[in-house]
Length: 589
Image (cartoon, rainbow, N blue to C red; front, side, top):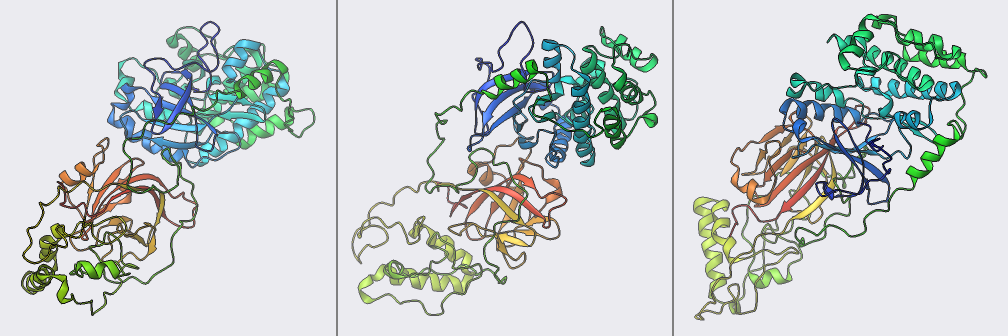
């Protein structure tokens, strides 16, 4: 599935309008046009918030319903995100666990090799040498990430102004595992398969070298080296017969012949492929000029560069949050493997236990928030002042009775029970202090006065923090106004990334729940699910998986995994989106 060229039926336009059965958005990306369709699914044009065009590839439902495909697809996407080469289209975002798996790659404004040859015929030998050298560099990077392309063909090679781009690497491996392969569905294109693929033998990087030789022959002659026809006939010729190279230019003959060796061990390496291209070049040094493509093909690049403008009207919001979310990526935040943006290092200290809030009038003048204020302490584990302001006589008998009741309960049953008794007397707000209504409401009724009926509590509003890089050895405190990673992994923290390789809920009465793949995370889902654990190992997580967090301080959160640190990163971290519902634990109305 090339994903960036139209289906050549008649004379189609490059950017096809969306049909009735096409989605208008994919995970926050608004779709501007359809680029094409293939055996694996459909491809759409969209844009990042910064205006860069991207190609969104939505996998066919048949594949998405296969658990083994999803497992392998997640592995291949994670590997593909490590591929960063000059001649590849990088994978910048993906969702492997949603109802319809998809991935986003950089949009390349150029025709596929298949479209260029079909429209304008075979390419000159000089162009083919530059094409093969660029593809060889792409395979070097792809193989270096532990990926075998398995489906290298003309429609998966895009021709850009500055060289070719190899796309869709590794996706065929995921498709090989599906139950569809046992029902007549062929993964890969027969005309560009290697003998070991046709016979079901072991696939190696040398498999891609054979496909590279086939692509070179196709680009130079305009026809596949083993002809066309039924898949069985083509595969038989690939395994048993010699290729037809009569029209291949002499300068390319050694390159193509060696790459098409039946025995994988006899095929040249990537370095040898590039050396053969250099030796066949008249100037001995490969240089890629601006006009490396024939004029007619270069004109197609101009057409594809004039992509439709992004859709300006944003999708309707689901619900207005009580506080603006973090100004990070609006779609599903393609992550960048950079060092985490964490706050100052603080020595880990035990998290304070529940404690009695000061009376209403004292809260109005206090600057340091309490656990009941809806706001975090000045820093995790901050000590509580030993002397709190006492209520004056004018505060009324009700405040005195509450304080006495709290002290009695603390002495008998501990702070947790006191919290349960008192939390209905004071409704926290986003900025600290209690939501008391007017002066004669529930929080300020004078002694002997008739209290007003208690108002129905509303559900807490979600606060969203996107693109948080949580480094191993750091933790998050959900009650903080600005949730940021802070140093420390042990010390009664609400959510920490332990250097042992797991997420940890250490706070008093805190727990985690790992939601199932495809299970939609929400406040209701987190409240209902009781598969509690204290630890979730990161190696059990994949991009898109979600973890519910309940803290001992009464907050709830939903962690959505967005990515992982790369192997060459100086630190180990987890990129995540975090949704926080403060004071939501057990507070459903």
